[in-house]
Every structure is written in C-alpha cells, then in structure tokens.
Image 1: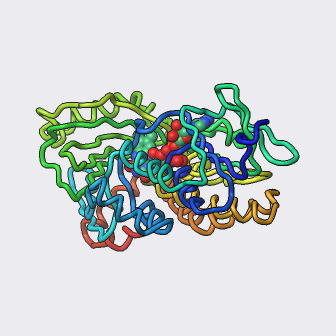
Image 2 (image 1 turned 90 degrees about the vertical axis):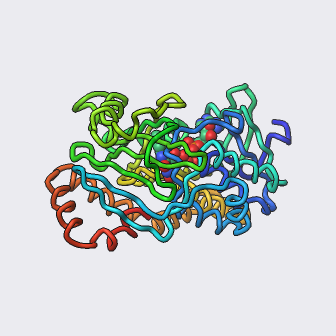
Length: 383
Ligand SMILES: Cc1cc2nc3c(=O)[nH]c(=O)nc-3n(C[C@H](O)[C@H](O)[C@H](O)COP(=O)(O)OP(=O)(O)OC[C@H]3O[C@@H](n4cnc5c(N)ncnc54)[C@H](O)[C@@H]3O)c2cc1C
C-alpha cells in the first residue's frame, strides 16, 4: 500500500459527526483522512433545526467557529415553539433553543472549516468507502473506486443506513426503533414567525409530528416524521403529510397560495437506544450510524456532533498510547453514555407510554391548559 494511503485515523463520512470529529483533530499530531462519498456543497434531507447541543458542541470545539457560523450563515435564532394539538396551541418560550439553517449550508460550513483549518487532514471527496476489513494492525478501507487505504483507527460517521457500522458492531436493522420523515421547502406560507418553530401533533402518530420551521430567506422547511409503521396504519408517509396539509382547516388556509419549491424527500431516523455498541477493535461509530437520534424530537445533529467530538478525543488518545483495542475505545462509549444514554432512555419510555396509552396525550394537553407545566418540562423534553 502506498504511504500516502496510510493514516493514524480515518473518518468515514463528512456530515455533522464526521466534520465535528475532524475539527476536533485539526491541531492533532496524528495523520488523518476524511472520506466523503459525495461532493460539497451537497443536499441533505433534514428539518434544518440546529439545536443548542449542536451549537454548544461547535463552541466547545472552538468558540470562534460559533461566531463565524452566525456571521456567515445568518441563521434564524429560535426563541419559541408552538405545539398544536386538537386545535389548541401551547407556546413554549425558549431562552436558547438554537437556530434554523438549511442543512446544505450548515454542513457545507462545517466542511469548509475542515478544509481551511485541518492542515493535517487529507480530504477525499467523491470517495465512498465500500467496505472495511480488520487487520492485526488496524483497518483496511476499500473505496468504491477500487483504491485501498489503511488506518489504525476508524471513526464511522456514515449516517442512518450505515452498512459499515452494522458490519463492525454486529447490530441489526430494527424497524421497531426507527422513525421515518419527509420534508419539502415551501415559499409563500402565511403567518410564519421568524423566531418560532411549529409542531403539530395527532394522537395516532405521537411522538411523530408535522413541523413548520421558518428559514432566513422567508421560506419554510415543512415536514412530517413518525415511527416506522405508524404511518402505514393510514397510508404511506407522503400521503399522511399531504392529507394533513390539505385537510387541516387552519393549515389549509395558511398554505393556500404557497408553493412547494423542492421535491418532498425522506429519510430514516434511527433511535435504537438499546443498541449501544458503538466501539470495538480499531473503531468508533458516531451519529446516526450509532442510532443516536432523539426518540421524541427526531433531532440528531446535536448528538452526532457530540459523538464525533468525543470519538475524536478517544481516537487521539488511542494513537498516543498505541492501543486501539476494544478496552481503549470503550472510553468513547463511557463518555457517550454519560452524556446521552439516560436522557434517550427517558424519552424512549415517554414515547412508548404515550404510544401504548394514547389517552395520556389528552391528559397532558389538559394539564398544559391548566398550568404552566410545559415550562417546567421543556428543558428535558427538547434539549
Ligand atoms: C426528514 C428528516 C428531518 C430531520 N430533521 C432534523 C432536524 O431538524 N434537526 C436535527 O437535529 N436532526 C434532524 N434530522 C436528523 C439529522 O439529519 C441526523 O441526525 C444527522 O444528519 C446525523 O448526522 P451524521 O453526521 O451522523 O450523518 P449524516 O448527516 O447522514 O452524514 C453522513 C455523511 O456520510 C457520507 N457517507 C455515507 N456513507 C459513506 C461511505 N460509505 N463512504 C463515505 N462517505 C459516506 C454521506 O454522504 C454524508 O455526508 C432529520 C432527519 C430526517 C430524515
């Protein structure tokens, strides 16, 4: 193998988890490769909600990156969320939810930081990794174009449908712990409020919801997501989305005259909290590839960035100690469990409870009308 094909650390995938890992390693002494199957700027199907965990991780990597994000992307700052259920709207006022920013722009922003500041990072775009093979010294990476690379440790940041993660961890695709979501961009939606996210609920789809997120160019990201299987009770997910917009009296008025300016596209939302195998011999798995999406909100950018940030630190330690054994990489799992495990389990239990006892939605709505309970639960519900 050519020398320029051998690295200490290889990062596969340049989404939020992969770029966060790369940025964390931007001053490292290690030799690093970042492989991305597409070319930036690339499209990414998402609701475009960048929560506070995402921005806090960006600040942790480098506070100046956050300032640069605000200055260059001019994202909308979100202060409120409107929850609508049975024609009643509850407003949750956040001091600090985060921002909305088109994923094409947000991901391209992170990637351009890696290009600019990662002098130690060799970047391979249009270079999908087809397979990985463990060797006694590390991992061989076989690219789609036939080239082979080697790394002592690999960070798998390949997103929701990662065959590489499944191969390395032995985990199976489990549709009972998987969501599905679609979104499209609209112009001309009436009564958008620039600092407010809108979530519309129906009992049968909980924790799924229809969202309307305002963007800084006056357009809106409009989508619907739910558990895999919930949508099939009625119809496929696109049909649920379209009929909701067409049949809800209030939404129909607001979308009269609006134009869908992108195709309606969808993706998977993995939140398999029981499959916490995220590391092993010479590898760590991050972001959606490790099923780290929040089971209630469906948000995953924040956990993806945190996991990339942690995995990069552990990978650097492994290289320094010349030990990439399962025991050494387990440190990553410990950090991740400490940060996300309890909250993901709590949300999963809430999700299951309401799914199995839908009347709890009405009880919550009743309590929400009577008291300002939502204020109290907002921090652990949405963070
Ligand atoms: C419709 C929808 C709406 C959503 N809305 C939100 C939201 O509003 N807020 C939120 O926080 N989360 C949202 N999510 C979830 C969010 O998109 C993911 O959690 C997030 O993108 C995970 O980041 P990641 O880096 O793990 O993976 P990704 O963002 O998927 O990045 C993976 C990268 O790896 C590359 N890649 C894949 N395979 C290979 C390979 N073999 N070789 C090389 N490169 C490869 C891909 O091209 C991609 O660039 C939404 C998801 C969906 C489907």
